[in-house]
Length: 114
Image 1 (cartoon, one colour):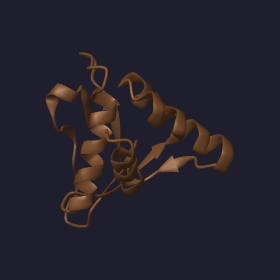
Image 2 (cartoon, one colour; image 1 turned 60 degrees about the vertical axis):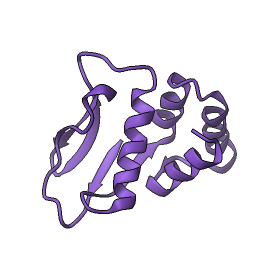
Image 3 (cartoon, one colour; image 1 turned 120 degrees about the horizontal axis):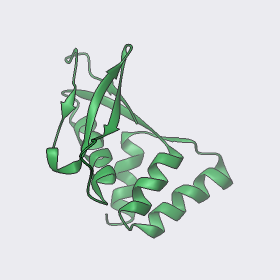
Image 4 (tube, helix red, strand yellow; image 1 turned 90 degrees about the vertical axis):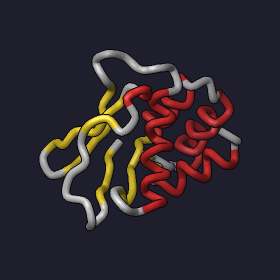
């Protein structure tokens, strides 16, 4: 997942919530999520994506996120959100939706009650 920072934030690296098992790293001029070497709970990836999407909605540190459909589908599947995971796969197969932004993530969360 790529994280796009707001104009108010120059850098944002490290764990946002240690219990999720994911953190942000800087690669070049961009910021990305990365799984901790210490492991993560089964729903940690999905919860980390949602956390970043909610931070983007707030707009203080994160402006937006970009999540590849396969990463999102995998995160949902690992979190046992099978119906939502299947919908992401169908959206890619039927409509060619390859990436999701923060608004898409929050809509998905609301639609499927996640």
